[in-house]
Image 1 (tube, rainbow over the protein chains, first blue to last red):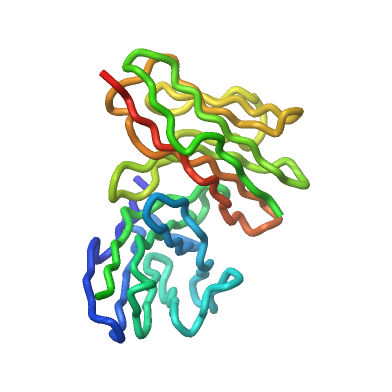
Image 2: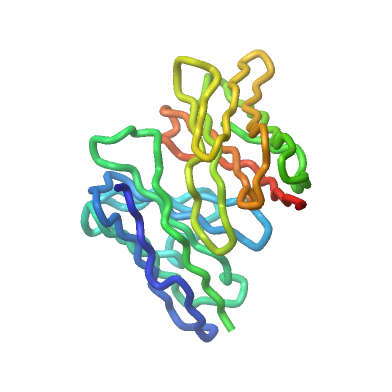
Length: 117
Length: 114
């Protein structure tokens, strides 16, 4: 195994509301989880690196107060998009490194498509 | 800092023909190199990776890639395309010193013609 799930797979929300996306490692423990966003027909851009029990490390240009990341356990990380606006509409993908596994391999979730109206 | 360039955002091949996707990287030290495939509205699946050792790497679904340090390249090939190979392909690099963060190329969309 090495299965990563994301919930929800799709979400539509109104502008100004907050949306939480969950990323779970189903059959392994994850030392580190990563959050990416992907705009249509574009590549993945790393938003932040999340380590269990510590603060996330955000990439340059990513607003930490807008994209809240919580990594409460070795199997769960959450991304909350606060006060979402239409420009936040995107495909959000998480990945996870396996505890005790090859440190250079990330296992990806299926993605969450966020549409902000 | 590392970077990845994929030549050709779209590639069209006939079923049964060779698939060749080009990837060049820039890095101050030898990186780890990856190829991922993404089907519509899905996450990424690892095709193959190079870390150390043999420079010709075989992956799933009949794909392989060769690490050429002198050319800073990691091109992906498959001898005979199948219809099921139609997807988006991403080359990526990571450095242990950079916390194992992946840097992706722009992606190449493969269309397979019957």
